[in-house]
Image 1: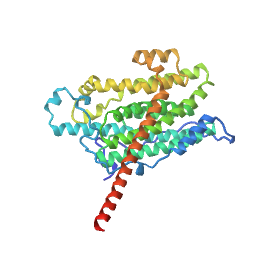
Image 2 (image 1 turned 45 degrees about the horizontal axis):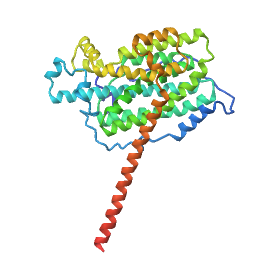
Image 3 (image 1 turned 120 degrees about the horizontal axis):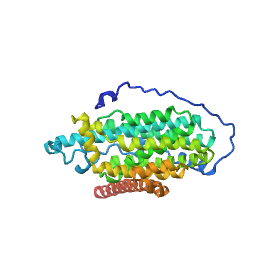
Length: 369
């Protein structure tokens, strides 16, 4: 079965072409540059891993409850539709919600891979090119992971959300090298990290939890790179140039807050669009997600130097200005530590299994002797 046959809705043309702008830049300066960025590049090389080996793909996943989703987190819960749904219907809803979420993760990771490759091409400094090359590989691995999970464990895909596609297209069409990183790593990946973290911390299903934890471990490095590279670059820009980037951030934040709600899942299940939008807006899960969404984005935007009056007013309007003082380093450190703890538990379990096999063989040999 091809991926096209797994789509719950028509994805349209299977090939999306975005015209590229800007110049490819070469640097003939091969001396060491920013020590912290080169250290991050070394860490990026050291932390590469194989998705086929680090993940136990034999772990079972119930396609009709792949995440252990509680009823209360579903937008239809408590509505007239919910009261008429059978347990099979509810399982179908959980299936499609998870398929939509992970499909957006998949499309976003492919977008991140393309943007990271664009930075390799267009960044003026060699140290930024080096690091972005490792990030391109990371994002390829993430797309591989999510694609395999959707194909082999859930069995359904959704097309890219229209507003996410627009934001990604705007990011890629811009000729300025920093915009690929601002749009993708700060905004779109900030959104993704909030969604990854929410599911990682609430699911009791081992396979999706491990996938999300390991992806977030990589993303902690990506966020660190963006903060270093953009912070240095934005110190050189004029007030007018900074305002242009702040306008891009404001527009992107409103789009992500107001448009990425999963309405198309309910529409696909037969709910009229206006009604589906109302249910999604009333969802406590969506309200919680929106708050978490900005916990990753606002402190990063402030840290890189985009903190003009109009941007601050927008964040006041969204009710998230105070998140600018959040400790982003602590969040990223927690992401890395959680992945390491999962590995420690996995290695301990494997070691215990091997020890048990040895002890059993010894006991069997003694009995036969």
